[in-house]
Length: 162
Image (cartoon, rainbow, N blue to C red; front, side, top):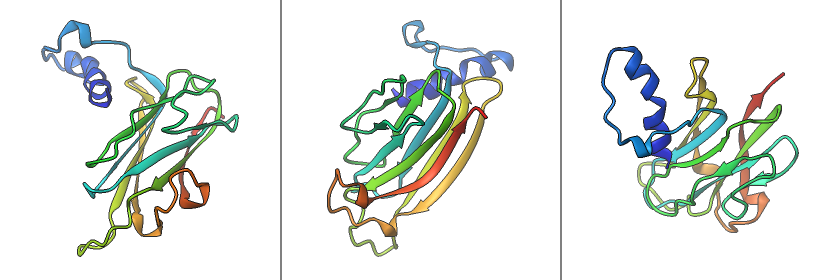
């Protein structure tokens, strides 16, 4: 689904550049969103979890995949490099606080600690799209308890509205 969001976001710029679009019409849809947050990481044996605290205080995470405001999170990726995604089509104004939980992020690695890349996107798949990238070192994670907020770290904030 995450790759499908990315593919659909390319439709307008490809057509505008005079290119052809060959994605099956059943897979083409309206994917523009007010706010989108995607994480991916560098260790294939890690389990990194994306948690989003919405402006109303509701937390969206693997155990609460949909919020009352309409935000939703992708499936929990427990192997590989991710990605995990949060998206909300019509986002209420306020801060969307990003937390990550490195549930299995503390394995010994001769190359040093792993990294998480966080993409904070406003107006995804619209002409006014804006993106901020955050690269985070995972050395702070201990991964003891998947549901324990003390094992997470607020890492970024995406602000919607004024």
